[in-house]
Image (cartoon, rainbow, N blue to C red; front, side, top):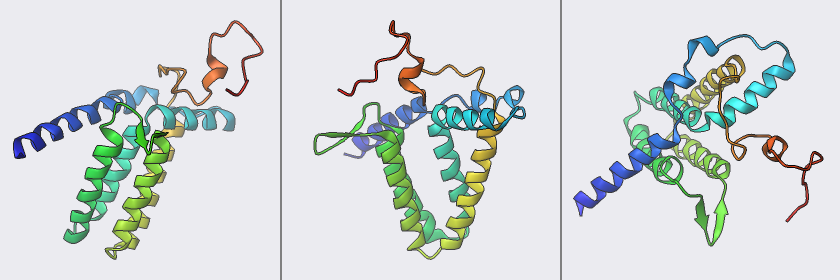
Length: 178
């Protein structure tokens, strides 16, 4: 039985690594530059959050973990919740299904973030959770605005603009609800 659990953990870890974008791409120093205007900054914010979503979630979790180093019980709770992150968010190739309905990745991410915060607040480290949350949001926000998006290759499904970027023959677009 333990060997089966180890192999499942290895598969989950490999699948989790597959959902992350390359760290070299995320941390490319030549891609960092000031946005030219507010519109450019908001476009970068949306595109980078979409493209590097898994990386940013992992960064936020690392910042939260580092804030708990002097709270052993909270670290144990965090590790249990992190295992849920691995299984439900990072290691899935297919959408999560609950009662036959597909749950979008963003809903899973928000749900797990809320579970993480509630679980840690119940261990009486609410100040650490708030401070690390603010630090994580500021770090991620600054990166999303300052990292240029010209070198990113995104699929139409992944793009926040979806069908607007498709090569549809109809220039007015197909906006019918099916």
